[in-house]
Structures are given as structure tokens and as C-alpha cells.
Amino acid sequence: MATKKAILYARVSTDDQSDKGYSLPSQFDAMRKYAMQQGFDVVAEFQDDYSGATPIEHRPEGRKAYAMLQTGAADVIVAYTIDRFVRPPEEGDEWDMPILIRGLAKLGKEIHTVRRGKLSTGFADLLIAMLDARKAGEERRDIRERSMRGKRAKVKAGKVIGMRAPYGYRHIRDVHGKVVTLEIDEKTARIVRLIFQWYVVGDEHGTRLSDRAIALRLSEMKIPVPGELQRGYQFRKRGKTMWGHSTIRRILLNEVYAGVWRYGTRIAGTTKKRPIEETVTAEVPAIVDRNIWERALAQRQHNKEFSPRNARHQYLLHGIIRCGLCGMMYSGEFTRGRKPGQSDAGRRYYRDSWCVEYRVQLEGRCANKWIRADAIEADVWDEIEELFSDLERLAAQLKEAQQNEDEKLQSIRDKLQITEELLKDVEIEIHDIAIAMRAARGKFIADFEKQQDEVNARHDSLIAQREKYIAQLGDRKLTDETIETLMRFARDVNEGIQHPTFEDKRYYLEMLDVQVTVTPGHYHIKCVIGEKDGEISQMKRGNIRIVRNSC
Image (cartoon, rainbow, N blue to C red; front, side, top):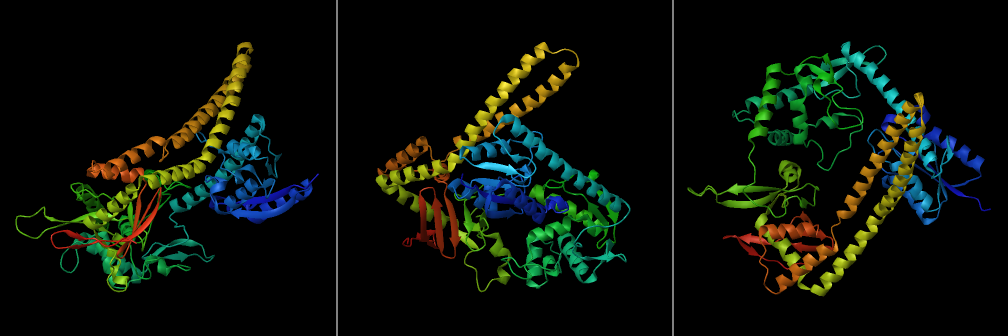
């Protein structure tokens, strides 16, 4: 009998770092020993520092391991525990674990774990594996909770914890080198005071500055950004001393500058904010007066409630056009005319916030920060109409794109099929429990009722999983009906019948999944049937467009 080729797969996330039992070296040591005992030939080892909530086939190294199994380069995948593959399901979570196991089983592959051995596709074995993973997850959550309780107790005692001091402060440490509290760093604290001064009171002319204006002013002054003062900081695309408005916003909202340091503002493992009454605080030296901080907070709320909108002006490419230099999305902006009595006269532009905000750091004038909406919208629509000009070519491109989309959806179809199989298993179990309950007596009734509740919960979870997959399959961009609609529109355009409105154009751009990327003087259009490059038309007086030849 041929020796089975095995892949060893280890995963560790930030939450596992404190648990030595889940460190990468310990996982690989245990897996190598297990593979040798089973007589496997280890052909590859992969490791990911990734969350278990991400499917293995979508993780950087997990994708490579999964591809080896699909192509036949390996027969077995080994992990330390089942939760190294997928996150243990919490209450209400979907059943990714049995879907993964049965999906690989359909390929004739095996899943092994050091603790449980080979995982069968039988429903009972799947349930045991799931409970194992849930237990491991609970153990790690207990460790986190104990750690959190200890940290919260330190903060209640007036101590500050954390790796980095807020901008404007530095740490005070005890004789053992542990952080105790914060003290003001005057060199950076004066910048914090300046930010609050500009935002609440105003600059030297008495004009209050916005987040973006403050960021631009600090960039012009070549003030190092907070990250530059941290060891190991790597410069992003914006470069040195280039402040972002989000940094200014975080400083203005941080209560530490009014003397209150808060711990536990976010729920662990998520980006969700914790209710402020559930946080714990420590008193620290204030950099700005409490009244100034509260005025800044009130000013932010006022700006949020009364900020102007561009709803009166239509932007055909809203949400689908971005800058090719920095990758940021463009936003529509309307500039009003200056002639008396012409308050609504003006021009529509697409504005690149990044280039406008950081123009002081760019060499020369950035031709990418403002784009005439009349020009780029007409250019894009000209390209779309050109796609519609050759009906035979358009039909072939749409069919090819539909076939490519079908191939991408095949994995979802496979998961849907496996989910249907699991549902049948659960329904059989529900039927068996119902029969057993009719004959049960005494205390056994309560046991069966508890078992029935658990099975019903699994059934509901699988139903939700099935509906999600069905929705994903139904959310196809290129259905037969979509293709027929596009072809009908193309025929009408060619025959001169169709005179599309703004709503028509937007509808067909979305159907084609059009995305536009702009670099100085040029555009790149990508949609479901291909890509196209061209030069942005110029506009002269009278809003007349000078059309350039597309390349």
C-alpha cells in the first residue's frame, strides 16, 4: 500500500500567543510525531498567523495547503486540534467545520488531528470534533477573561497598562520596568494643545479649522506624526510628517487629554465599542482643560448634524471611481459660481481627498486631485457605448464572463450540497428523539428535552447556512436575464432608439460591475467583460469637451 502524503498545518492568532500549548513550534512538534506514528510522508508544512473565523482556503498559507489537496499533491492534512482549521461554532454560528470535513472527504482526502486522530464524516464524529473545538475555544476565552480581570483590577487601582503611551505622554515605570502611569511629554503635548486650540478657538486669524485643515497645517509645518515616534514605525505611502485627518479626530475624541485614561473601550477580538459605563478609568495628568475637551466634543457633534451634502447634484460614478495613485475613492464636490445672482451656477468635480490633503508632500502639482465630472463621466459612458456597438462580440464576452462567474460559484454550490446532507442527518436525529420521548418516563424526559433543544439549534443554524448559500447563488451578476437586458439595451442604442437617463446609465454601470481608476490624465475601466484604458477628455470654456482618442 502506497504511503500517504501528508501536509502539516499550524495556525496561531493573537489570542493564542499567551497560551504556550498553541505556539507554532509546539504544534509542529506534536504533528510531526503524530505523522511518524501514522506512517505518513510529510510533503509540506504551512503556518498562518490568522483568525480562525477566516476559512482555511482564504488564508495565505491555508490557500496553498488546500490547493495541494485539491490537485492531488497530498492525501492528508494534519492539525494539532480541529480549531486550527476553523473557529469553534458559538451560539448562532454557522457550521463551517462539518462542511470543511465533508468537502475534503468528497475529494478523497483525510483530515487528522493530533488529539482526535482521523475525523470521520459521520454525524456523531462531526459532533464530537465540534465539541472538542468548542472546549478548546472556551479554555482560551477563560485565559483571556482571567487576564482581563487582572488588568481591570490594576486600572481600578489607578495604574495605566499598555505597550504604547498616547501621543503627548510618556510612561512612568516602576523598579521592575513595568508601566505604572503616564506623565506629560511637553515636546508633543504642545502639539496636542495646538490641535485643540485650532479646532475649538481658532488659528491666529480666529478661524476654526477642520480635521483636514489641521492635518494639512501640521504637514506643512513638518511636525512628525505620532507613529514616527514609535520604534519600528514603517512609513506608509503618504511619507514622513504627513498627518491624516483620522489621527486628528482620534486625538480630539480621546478623553485621556482631559485627564481620564480608559481601559476596555473595545470588546476583545472585535471592533465593537464597549458601553462607556463598562470601561474602567485611571486618573492621569491633563494636557488640556476639561472644558476645552468637552467643547471639542460638542463641536464635532454640531458639525456632524449640520454638515452640507451633495445630494442636489448627481454623480454618475459615485462609489465606483478611485485614485490610481493612492487607491482612495473619489467623492463628488460642487464648486459654486462667483457671479452675482448665479448661486447655483458652478461645476461638478470628483475630488481625491488624499491628494488634496497631502499636496504639500507631492512633487509639483498633482494633476490627480480634481477631475471634471462632465469629462470623466462622458468618457466612461462613451466606452460603455463602444462595448455595445458590436453585438456579436458583446454577446460572446458576456457568455464568457458568465462562465467564469459560474466557476467561482462552484465552491458555494458544493457547500450548499453538503449543508443539505447535514440537514438530512439532523432531521433524522430529530425524528429519532421525538420517538424516544414518547416512550420516555421520569427524569429521562428532561434529558431528551435538552437534547431536542440542542438538535433544534443545530437545525436552525444549518437552515440559516443554507439560506445564505442560496442567496449568494441568487446574487449572480450575470444571469441569463441580465445578459438579455444588456443585449436589448445594446440593440436599442445601435438603432438610435435608446436615450438613457441618468438612472438608466447608473443601472447599466452597476449591472456590468464597472470600476474606474484614474491616474493623471488617464483612466482605466474594468467591468465583467473586460478592461479598457483611455485619456481623460479636457474641458474648455462653455463646458465643451475636447475628446481624445482612446488607446
